[in-house]
View 1 (spheres, each protein chain N blue to C red):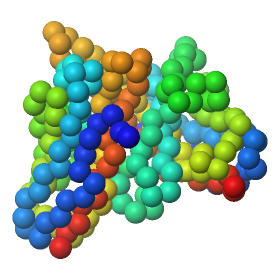
View 2: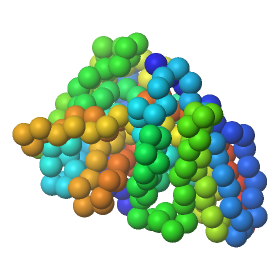
View 3: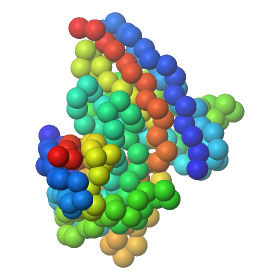
Length: 127
Length: 112
């Protein structure tokens, strides 16, 4: 089934950067994308982007382009998400999640879901 | 403003059936992309509840079911229990936002 274990809580000053790690176990790390999703206090889920562990290819949500970088270390089976120029509205819990690839055939698609999820990493940026 | 639209809250009494809607558009659900549902309890991370519109992962109760029609999808919960009280999110993929996964705004289920 697999598991994702994330790094611990962070408190950062405005303008600083944060790097969150996500260590995979129980499945073949290189076979599945790692996605990052964040959740601000009392708010919904917001998708940030994906990273393919085999190729290192990435895709970022438009909102975060230029401010986020997703990388990996295939030796340690760990994915990383770095967010720069932090602001108070970046205060959120950041989750990594294994993503299932999308397959489309004759106008109908399957796949694209996230499972499992990491336990979440709270990042606080005081205003 | 979420790309997928869910009601902010729904409620029901124990034993009842409730449904949660998820409305998209021709660039996501209506384009043929699958809809997935997640359950989240306070202080915990999301958990996959339904994948590919109407499939349950191993271990998920058959009281939960999903459906999709056109540009919308629904999550149904039958035989409502107090332990079902949680937030529920739908998720899909959107063509316009190249490579973007998109979520609904979430629905808080209250069991009266």
